[in-house]
Image 1 (tube, one colour):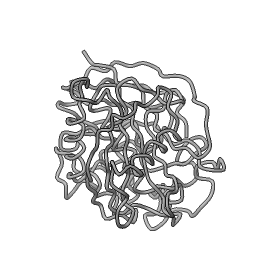
Image 2 (image 1 turned 90 degrees about the horizontal axis):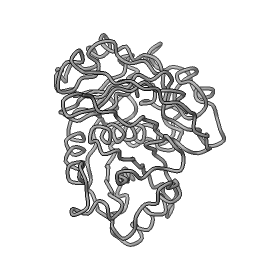
Image 3 (image 1 turned 90 degrees about the vertical axis):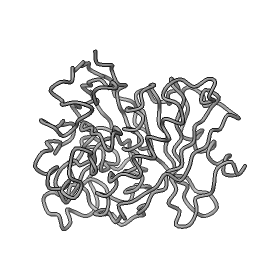
Image 4 (image 1 turned 135 degrees about the vertical axis):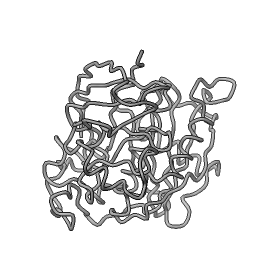
Length: 336
């Protein structure tokens, strides 16, 4: 679906960004243009808190993220901060944290892993790249053997990290997950743009990761009626895009928990991990599309009261395209 406007605060080394969205965010339309939440089963065992229903399609119970850094700009002698090594370390920390434990309620194991990473410098991504170009790039690497195949259980998500400044064909979209058929199975992939800020990159990666796990093909867990605004696939991180958190020091987006009835980021380092669902249920205010937490739902290196907020409107609505799921974020604005 599409975001109309976003209010954005900045990310710095000393403070975590908080996005105050005036509309729900990320997902473009499903194949056939089905409006989000119009079809499928109603709320399940979690009752009124169940804003996402199981459509019984595939899920990835234990996603294995494989990072691919595309382009010569990632070579050590060329790369600006954050480097590929810094991103890989951050994502490794995230995957080893408790962040995915909330996915057990969505037919998941609550665990995942960073399977590996690769730097591919045989070509450069074009500015204004398309989804087909990303899929073709991944397919070429699979054919050449420069990245491993999907492996048993087909749990791999190939995550392509773009160099700084390389943007997709649709202005304003900063991440997407998708799949394509190859040799009788689906290849799951995602791409992430890069504005030169580690927190922004890991937030986009976390968002696409949990949605790839719970709805890789648009037939897994989708929002029930009116969960999200506008057409498109409505997935579990979409209504929580405005709630950011720090998990073991890594910036993430929260995702919806049917059990807690709130946006959660399990494993927040300032919380007791064994009690995160109950605490998030009482603390979080991100219960609807585009609502930011009122108190400490998203924290960085210091208390939110100490974060200087630099706010701007992001206007415009990108043209919707069928069969696409995209994350729209405004680039972070540095706090001073």
